[in-house]
Image (cartoon, rainbow, N blue to C red; front, side):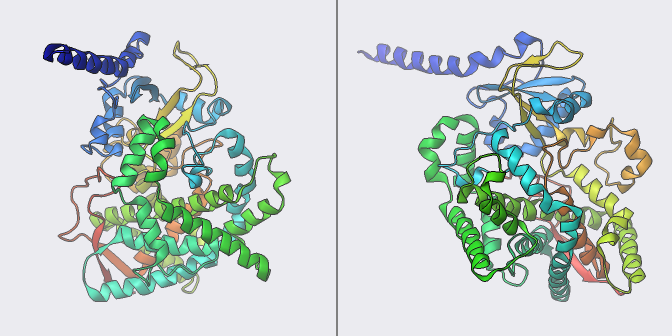
Length: 500
């Protein structure tokens, strides 16, 4: 074979590969559905893969470009999926026709990622019975039992704040919040004192930090899972953090064994899992392996500390920028404590209306999940349209775009808790605010997140003030490496003591 034949052969192979990866890209155009132009190999995700944009920024940009369309089409590699803007259609997917969109569309290989078989990712066959059995841990009665445990952790947070205020240096409030929520989850879910606030080398905080630090291995693993999932069986084991898996598997096993041997009972996640293990016949005949049970404790730990610490960090960021809002909230907190002689009750958390508005406005502007995903269980035609999707197609709901739409929330970049006055909320479409999703597959721990986050904020703001400093990132810039919406460089603020 001479030089020209070799060159021709290489060119033919390149063209064949290119054609294979791009031939599908007429899918939406052929169906009369608009969308951003895809590129080879990664579809619409190249600028996310190469870290030009954070996924949150991309979701927001895509939505605002096509928000006047009821839907728009996109590609995840070679796989087409549909993004829904129309809020009535969103309600159909999440609530009215939920049974046709039960799954989130993630493929879980438990041999490669044993702790990924948890409630957030599980397919409907195992999700439904497990959700039913685990939901009681988040009832009002159980949350009241956990309340003193959260308050106890808040006492440690108060001591930490006093040290920070005396030190006079800027503190990363995102990291501080993560330490607090790690301690809370340790106490409420595992019955363990984690000491993350007191010990910078706390193993639990180190594991939590490792889970959300975008290093090489998890980045490559996520790319393979998203664009060539078939290769996960081959490369997944090498890219998986066995240290994290082994840590949580041992933690849950040892905790269960200790409680069994010492007849210890606590109103927490571990106890609930122990009951399921004792009575597997009550869970629709699904195989309750130790790893499956551990995965549920694992996701409670991860979601419990990460989501609430993110919300606390973003709330403190906005309160530092909006001192009038901070002062008003502090006054409500102090009035509440004064009414009860310096203590805080479970009922008080619900009664602090302005705190609730600040909490919700934070979640509007900085949602934990910037998009929701669902998968069609069968071929589906959207009501009142000619738009039909096949069985197995994935649906996206662009939460971050919807919640920053100026037609829904005027001046969306402004932090305005009054958006959540009762009359204002009633005037908006119920699907315009989805920080915890909606419908039967919404966030199981949403009420716990409310309690944990609000106690954390009341503890910080009652006797302390947060201010911006030279390290504070202004204006806000999302970390392009992070999957969740995260401020680049951390939430660096000054904390000072405020006189009672």
